Amino acid sequence: MTGPLLEARDVTIRFGGLVAVKDANLTLKKGEILGLIGPNGAGKTTLFNALSGFVTPASGTIRLYGEVVNGLPPYELARRGVGRTFQVERPFEELTVLENVMVSTFLHHRRTADARAAARKVLVRAGLADRADQRCRELNLARRRRLEVARALATEPRVLFLDEAIAGLNPPAQAEMIEFVRSLAEDGLGIVMVEHIMRVILSLTHHVICLAAGEKIAEGTPQEVVATPAVIDAYLGGAVDE
Image (cartoon, rainbow, N blue to C red):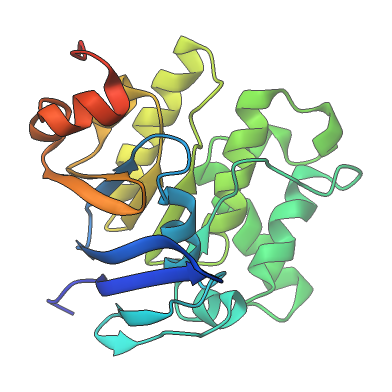
């Protein structure tokens, strides 16, 4: 496939009389990391949820690999290659790390042996192979975040949505996660990420969209967007150091 992995055109999302997102447009290519930024209540999570099947737009078009997917539920999009993480990770606490990932690998591997083998490969990719038999309730935050990404990767996505996967981590763990996410894009995944840490946005993303009050106020490279006066006024409050 040579075209975009994901496209949104004039997507509007309403909750009753409230317009949460108005006429949103974006394109995601293979190997690209797209950042969604903006103040709380800007519509980032709502757009994120629409693109990943958790909210149905009132109007506009969402295409996955060129095919219209408006209204398809998350499980159907997962079968078609859309994976996502959640801001608050919720693993099965009493299951092992391996068993948690196997829950996701069963999407494409019906035999238990095949699902287990696929899960072990994902754990190697996520740097969690040495924790395979550990209960999830024993993991620290950094490893729980990696497990959340691993569970999404286990569905074998081509498009991956990351919801604040790096927020709250200490600087060494942030650096490790940045390299991990970068390596996923280098492998060809298209990634859409919501993140508030500007250092992460500047160092990791290829393209950035800033939303405010449900509308796009800037789009471009990370450096272009953070230097835009409207973004500084609505979100940053001042210049950002790289």
